[in-house]
Amino acid sequence: MTTPPDRHASPDLPLAASPHPAGDAPPPPDAAEQRVQDLLAALGQANDAYETLLRENASIKQELELLRQELERYRRYVYGRRSERLADPGQGHLFTLADQVEDVPDAPPDDPASPAPRKPRRSRKLDFSRLPQVRIEHDVPEADKTCSCCGRPKARIGEDERRELEFIPAKLELRLHILPKYACSHCHDGVKSPAGPDRPLSGCIAGTGLLSQLLISKFIDHLPLYRFEDIAVRYGLHLPRATLCDWVRESAELLRPLYDLQKGLVLLSPVIWTDDTPVKALGGDGPGSLTARFWLYHGDEAHPYDVYDFTTSRKRDGPATFLAEYAGYLQADAYSGYDGLYLGPQSVIREVACWAHARRKFYDARSSSPGNAALILEAVGRLYEVEDRARDLSVEARQALRARESVPILERLRGDIDRLTEQVLPKSGLGQALTYARNQWAALCRYIEDGRLTIDNNVSERRLRDQAIGRKNWLFLGSVDAGPRAAVLSTVMAGAKRHLLEPWAYVKDVLMTLSVDPDRVADLLPDRWGQSHPEHVLTHRLEESRERARRRDARRADRRKGKCDRERADVPAAVAQRAAPPWAP
Image 1 (cartoon, rainbow, N blue to C red):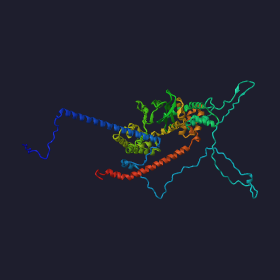
Image 2: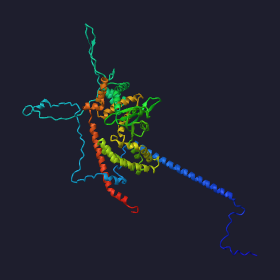
Image 3: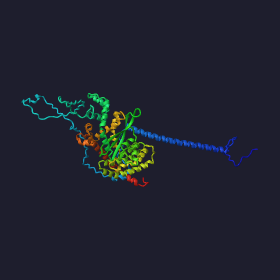
Image 4: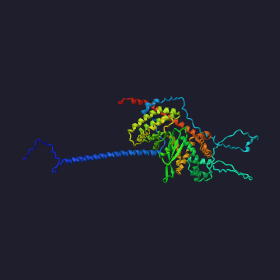
């Protein structure tokens, strides 16, 4: 007998399978909860590992970006141009247009009828006034001086002049000074003989002209002594290199009073610009060579001297010793060795930083942060535009112009730096540039306090080019003891170069005067010597630098005018965009 189906069961749906197959008992509740906890713990560990990998990946990407930026800087330093000029230096930013265009004077309208002014061409005519002129007559034969028709002598009706510039090689000559001796053959009262000419170095066969040429070849033309040795052989005499070294050493000792006087005058300057450069020197405590330093101290216009100092390292002892008795402004880079001069409780030296160093860091950060770096570079460019217009002003007028125009730019620039610091990574290129600017901000703004200060330290860097060029030629100093002597001779040569003196005549007179009358050392200062010997002041470099400055100022004025024109064209759109409501299209 069959059992009737349940009337409550659906005939179309199968019965649900049991969650536990026949014969398997359900797991206890404690085991299930433990498995869930294990799975959650494993998931947490996976999430921690994932976050760790994300952080490591971000760190690797950041390190890779920093290495890429550093590689780009090295590639530009080795293969690229050294100029830091922007691709479009006249491009402005809209965030400053409405505030700055009002101060720009209206440009005079161009008159289409008037022709554009022509730039003066540099004269290519050579100046022969300083050269000896030798007149050489070339005449026709005597037979051609008689007329072939009438037989009368021909009259000279004029002449043509043809110039020829010739070179006569230098030469060495041995001068024999004859000193006769006189004595009485009857009384025997002694022998009389003239004293003879003075010598710059006692017991030295070299005359002042030879010593001057040796020092100029070494410290102005940057020739190693072995090259001068070869040149002397071409002139007919082999001068051993050891002898040349002795002459350089004794000349440096003779010139040391002039060095000490210039050092004392530079320390009286209210502003000193300083920088340093490395140089290899043989010897020292360890084997091989060591990296020594040349330090340059540049005085102001009232104390126009460049003094070099030599140290065997870059420790702070070098500047601290040289500037132990100095009081005033010191403009330098952000080298930490100067901090002891500024931070002492009784310090009378005020730090002035360099905007060129700060700008260079933002320039190097353009590849990683082009927009933000260009924002800072544009503001720094406006600071330099103010300095271009302030260059020919008096000290008081320059300070007033900075207070009127540079101070608002600096205030806006500090706000941008603080805002960007919160947005970028500290170790990025832009972050490092912002950190440098924030740490040096007080010293970067100090140049607006005094019109005698400059916006950067480029003047001392330009003076150190001589050492950089010489270092590529003579490669190293022969000994550590040669460093102070090289500093003395470099100081004397730098004075001649700064005051455009003909170096051979200047050094020759200095050597002879100090050997005969050391008390006249004040008359041998390069500025005073140039005033008393105007015939030995070289003007070709002065005219060249003035012409270069005129072309530079003209280019900058054109860029400023073009920038103002672009800003005036963009101001209405910028103002309209600023005044438009948020819902406007």
